[in-house]
Structures are given as C-alpha cells and as structure tokens.
Length: 468
Image (cartoon, rainbow, N blue to C red; front, side):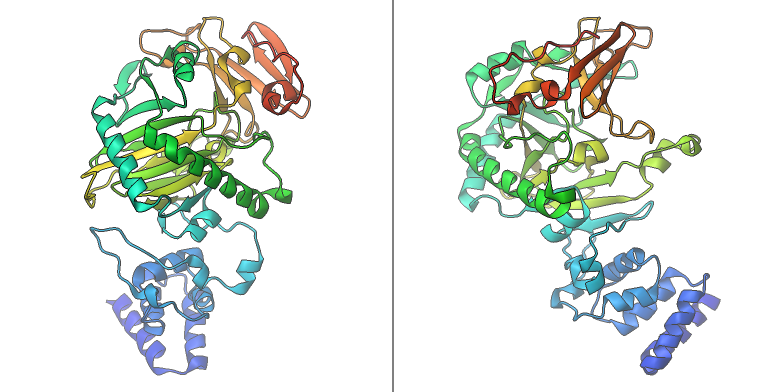
C-alpha cells in the first residue's frame, strides 16, 4: 500500500510539475535506496509515454537504476518505432540502443557492461550486436531465391544427418540436434576420414559440399573477411589483429551443417574446439528456416575467493545477451569469441513456422582449417590418441594460455592414459616459444613454427609433432 501511495505521488509530481520540480523529484527518487524499480519505471513512463516499458527497463538497468541518467540518455529525439510493443509469443524488435546513448558515451569507446546477473539483454540491430558482443550480423545475406534454393537442398540432406555421441562423466550421450560435416572436395573427404580425429575418433560420414553451398561459399568468404577487417579497424587495439590470430585471409574450407527440429532442440553453452582452427578462430554461420535465439555470455575468470561459488553463479556474473537469428542471416563469430565467451542456441517455448522449413532451423557454420594445425603437426598423447587444443578460460593466473589435452576419456569405448582417464599437456604461449609440459618431460617449439607456419614464405619442412 505504501509503495502504491509513493508511486501515485511520484506520478502526480511528474505529470503536474515543471522541469525544476520534476528534477528535484528525480533526485529524491535516485537518493532513495528503497525506491522500487516499478516506481522508477512509472515515473519514466509518465515523462516519456511513447517509449515502451521493456526499453525503459533496459535503459534503467544500463544506468544502474539511475532515473536521472536514463532521462539524460533520452534527451535525444525518440524514434517513432520505439513505441512498438513486444509480443509474448512472437519475435520482437527494438530500436538501436545508440538512439538513447549520450554523445559523451559515443565518444568514449571504453566498454560498458549492459547486462547484469540473472538478466538477458535482447539485441536485434547489427550496430548493437557489433558493439556489445563478439559477433557481427548481416541480415538478408543472400538473394531471396538463392537462400530458398540452399534451404531446400539442405532439407533434402537432413533425413540422413546423425546425432553425435560422446562420453560425459562415464555416460555415453547424444548431441541434442543432428548434424553432418562437409568439405570442399573428394580428396579432402578422404583426408578427413583417415587423418583428422574428433573426440578421439574418425568421422565416418564426411561429405563434399553441395552445389548450392559451393555457390555461396565465395560470398561467405568475401563478407566474412570484410567483417573481420571492420572488426580489426574499429574494435581491436591499435587496429591490429589479436595475438595468435591467423595472419592470412580467412578461407571457408569446411562446414558443419546443423539441424534443429522444433523449439526443444538446442545446444547448451560451449566454446567450439580450436584443434584444427588454431587460436583466435573466426566462424561464419548462416541461418536458414525458423528464427532462433543465439545467446552469448562473457567468461568471467575466477580467483581463490570465488572457489566456493557455484558454477552457475560464476557463469552468470554478467548476465547474457540474446541475438535474434532470422532466416537468411550471416552471423560472424570473431576472433575473441571462443577464448573469452561461450555461446548457445536457447530452447524456444514458441516458434514461428517457416513456410519452407516448417519447424526446422538449418545452420551452416563455415570454418577455416589451418594447414599448420593438421594432425601430423600437433601433439599426440602417449596413449595414442591425438590431443585437442584448449584455452584456459576461468583461472585468472593462467587465463589466455593454451593446453593440448588427450580426449580419449571423452570417446566412447576408450580410456585415457592415466587413472583420471585423461592426459594433459599444458603449453605456454610466449613471444618466442611454445613450451609443452607433461609427465614425460618438456619439449619446445618456436611460436612461428606452430602458429605462423601457413604465413611463412619458405619451403622449409613443417615442425615435428610433440610427444606428450
């Protein structure tokens, strides 16, 4: 009751007073630690009735609960589409966050955390996605008919897709969606089946890219490299590529095609394997069919003080960002994604059926397999299984370092070398060397030999693999 009375007083003051009195009321409201979010939203709505409640709430969260700060941010003219209401059962749209940003904020490139623990910030516009996530997006990527032809072709392939199996805590589980792996030619199909290992096993179903996939590959390559160039110019320190990022041009020479059938098929938070892509990998992802929600969250490193916190508490320390992926969109996951963020496809309680795909979403994730990370150049565990490349993400003291890890313990029917079912080689990337540490001793390779082999313009033989 007291809150209702307080809200009524605030509304009366906001609607019936001049600017000076209104400013005094806002100052009192910000000084009152007991003032509820509902009261603040009511005041903001009375002053800006053309801005919907969801947008006001996002702005209030961004301003750390300061009504005065929100009003300052709303000092620029309100866009006409800001008043559109979001439906509970359909895809929503929002105006750009930059429309509510102060000039001083636009001039200051320092990162501001827009999300808070337990909250999800929904972004739709390319400029907001590029500014606040490790991604960029291109809507209406292909001509309409070309997108439909690609979708129909892959829908014909979907019935033969399989669900991957892997070990999780001694249990054999299946992936929550079906998928298939495609490469550029038949020679590479043979190499993939006999030389590349995934979770300690060879893939038995590797296919040559379809005719329609082949047609769009060149456009994917061009647009992804354009997005990489923009990212480097506007977002990376000194306008340079990130350390360990591939020095050459990004070339889509492999692709996983995933199928999500219905809103319940999803994939939880994860980082993609770097083993054959190398550090700071870039991935181009085409979405076709049903629109789904792609969520990302920053990995927050922990220290000893965080040891007692639950995994969920640590993971949700900065909330998450949801990116809407409509039909015929290209999402680029940039070089900072896999090491510093995790991503997922969120389950959907309600989906809008697509006129061609029905309840299916087809996702093509184009990747650049780097020749210097071919299995013959990378470490192999003493148990005989090729290792996978991992980045230390959570421990503050080791964050940013990489390790080669035996994956036999994650492969159905296999056991790792030691009692813990895995053997791990930790390597330290420095400017001069890569040092491998394991129970069998220590080996080193130059940084150039492992990370920059594809950029060298000599005919020198590639480095020998490490024995772990």
